Length: 327
Image 1 (tube, rainbow, N blue to C red):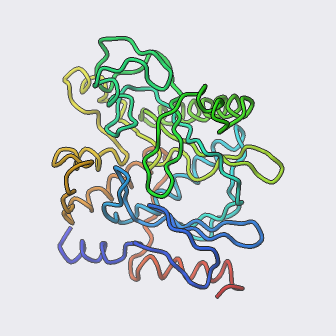
Image 2 (cartoon, helix red, strand yellow):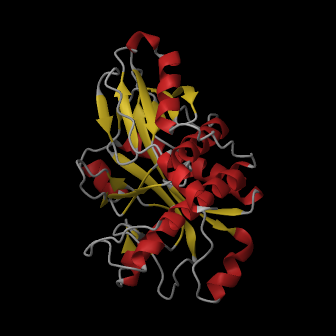
């Protein structure tokens, strides 16, 4: 790709999606959201890229990949758990039902891996053998398959705070969830993960771990929200090279944002040092990885939206069509 082509790609990125015409704006690390008076919520996936609790860059097409991967999985898991989706007015936008969100993220893991403070490999490598209430055997290696699938929940970090590890017993004891809610979330989370693992395997991928967020609707029904099995919420490895690379002590081939974490961790301690600027060609490489993930995990061709104008202009035009009363 030539330098002008790279620049055109970078110029079109959706770095923010604030539209003053829409009510009740909130900004997350990656998404912009608007709460409408009728109980619907507009969520716009930007191209912002976060890791280590920091927004690090904007990756072309990343928001579209995020939104459309989530759409694929919401549709593939609707028989397991109801979800919040109402409509998709744009490749980067989902309209959902507003929920009362539960204060726990349900993290499901099949492998001993990870680079963050809440990752079980980080804990295990420090000598801990009881993680999230589960006892792990001695002698395990990084990226090895766990003896069984683990639920390792975290409490949601508020206002930029880190997510905190917690056990099932602590969740109930602290009143974050009732025992009945925990039991339902645990059952649904494991069922969702099993479905994701099955579909990923058919496409040559290992679903390594993931996180789910749930809310309660106005009838008290637990509902899957936010995203599901996306490159931001999940880790995927290529199945065909996993065993060979594990035996050689190499990192598995990843198709998720782990490549960004590893790129940064190889250059600094992201929790202590300034994070270096990511070169333009590396950002384009990340974009290609995201697109390959979408195509591999869904078996569908990724439709690159034309970049004759910025993504923001297209999103705004589609929001005007879907919500003319606000524009």
